[in-house]
Image 1 (spheres, rainbow, N blue to C red):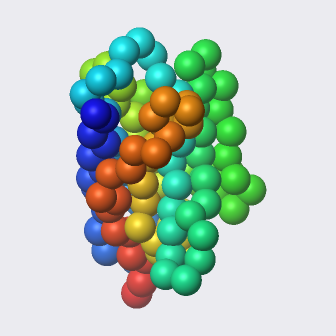
Image 2 (tube, rainbow, N blue to C red):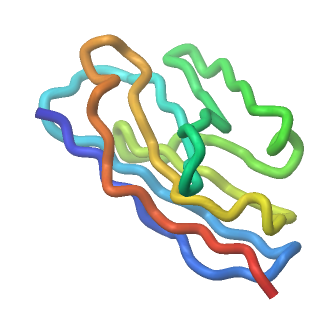
Amino acid sequence: QVQLVESGGGLVQPGGSLRLSCAASGSISGILPFGWHRQVPGKQRELVALITRDGYINYDDSVRGRFTIFRGTAKNAVYLQMNSLKPEDTAVYYCNIPLATYAHYWGQGTQVTVSS
């Protein structure tokens, strides 16, 4: 079993910032890759940021230059720094481990609402 716990969401005005946290625990070992995804009602979940075991990072074009994914000092903690937030960033954000063994595990997500 693997547990993924996301936190840090909230209500923020356009142009504001939030930092999301993800903590992974359970039957995991080593340094893992992580992805941050988001989903709005009626749409498919989309990957917005990815960090691999080796530290390779990639972003969806919609967030590149505004969002930053990085690892914390705690093992298998990952963060998403979101700056210059836009109303279209409003979604539930989830973290995920993009490996076959763990990919079916999802946390409860954290709601991000960008509105004035």
